[in-house]
Image 1 (cartoon, rainbow, N blue to C red):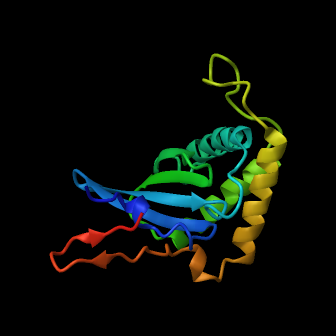
Image 2: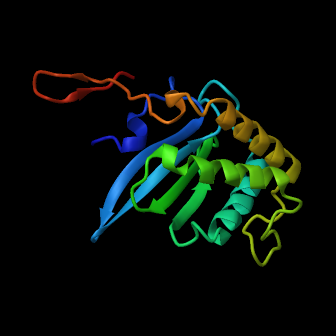
Length: 174
């Protein structure tokens, strides 16, 4: 079975940043999935689940209300490994082209006074939120993005190199 694109990224080398995970053609349109990675996988602790949940609510609300971007947003949600988020947009832009959007989203989260949509009617786990930790992660990531804006490493995935057998099959070690 062929690995999906996100599993071909060398998670031992990835740093926090904004990466293109995949591009898909849907009818005559292109949609792009971005990996918004807040922590170094397998080297830093996963993001606190309650803080991640709060960041999801705050940033999804911000993105879907941004007049310049709201029509382009398809999805904002957490990665299962709790090291970042996926952002899916209409169109085909480079990670550098969405830098300002991502930065402003995390700055907005850092300024948040409440977490939207946290009533039992609006949220499937409404008690699992942590605004203060969400703000801490948001500020940390936004500061990191600003400090590293000129570093291409935060915009380009490190790829896993796989040995290819004589028969053309990929070799995977265990």
